[in-house]
Length: 247
Ligand SMILES: [Zn+2]
Image (cartoon, rainbow, N blue to C red):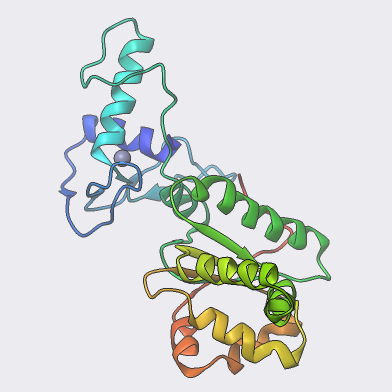
């Protein structure tokens, strides 16, 4: 559970804060409505380095919150109030976690900007992809595509029955992915652009597209087919610099 969630629980116990219970989002573990405080509250743990108080708008799942309370009770030697099996580790809503840590909502498209000239940003971009597959990949279908490899597999699809089946499987994985990560927009040659664009267009409407790009490949964002360009124009931009990605 996130520090912010723990704080939220304490806050709701101590203060009278109106809670919005609908239209805020869904818990990816319990599939119930998330709750959100109607106004910002002071953060207790997350004060900035300069010592000034940080404020935030707590958002949490009531069921995750009950689980947390139960774990606390058991820690204190009492019995759980909500019947939580405390022998199992508590699941984390990674969508909410990354949103709080990085301000990125992975239920919506993201353009990740990094730079080969900044070695740390390259590592951080790779870590971000790994973080998504390791964590978010536990609850939804995540597919990472190396465009040059994709184009090669596409070209080879008529070479044998095996290659054909391999490509059909890949195509299916792309079309059914909840999150498709293109790693990266720089890793293919111009003549493959059309194939890559068609591939991106085959991602389902409700899926998320995450595109990694470096300054040298940004121009390709402008060459996307109109339907994709409209989509990507509304995407969140995540600038990854050597400041790093928290895990
Ligand atoms: Zn939950």
